[in-house]
Length: 185
Image (cartoon, rainbow, N blue to C red; front, side):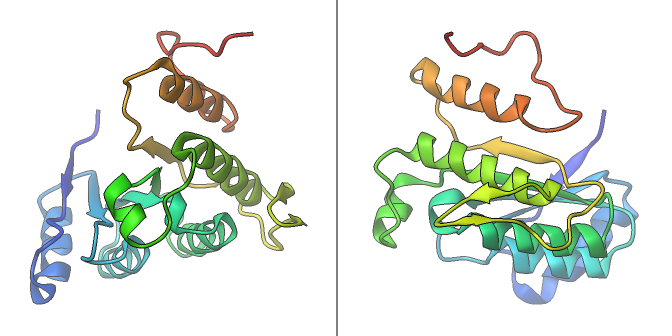
C-alpha cells in the first residue's frame, strides 16, 4: 500500500515547491497535483515538483481529455517519464462538464472521447501507431510508460465502467480487477 498527499490547488505559488519537498521528507509515496478550472496546469506543476524532489511519485489528477490533444498529452507524458523514470502517474478524465463548456471543449460524448483519448495516448507511449487526424507514431517510445489512472467518470450507468474496463485491459501489465464490469459481447 502507498500513501499519498494532494497538493492544494490554491496553494500560494511561493509555497508550492516547499510543499512538494516536505511531502517527500515526510515519507509520502505519492504527491498529486490538480489541474483544475482556472488554477494551474497539471503538466507544469508535475515538471516543477518532479525537478524539486528526488524519489516521490508524482500523480497528475486529472488532465481533461476534451481540453488536450492526445499527441500533446503523450509527448508531455513521454518527456516527464524519460526525465523522471518510474515517478509519474498520469491521470486522465473527461473533465468537469461546466468547465469544458465554458472553454468551448464540451464533447458530444465525454466517455467516448475519454476512451479514444486514452487509447491513443497509450498507443503512442508504447511506440505503436495511433489514428488521430492521420496515423501517427512517437519517434522515441519509452520502455516503461507511466501508469495511467482513468478518472472523472460518474457511474450513473454501466457505460463508464465498461469504458474504464476496456481501456484498462488495453494497458500492458495492467489488468482490471475481476470485479470490474465486463463489456457486453
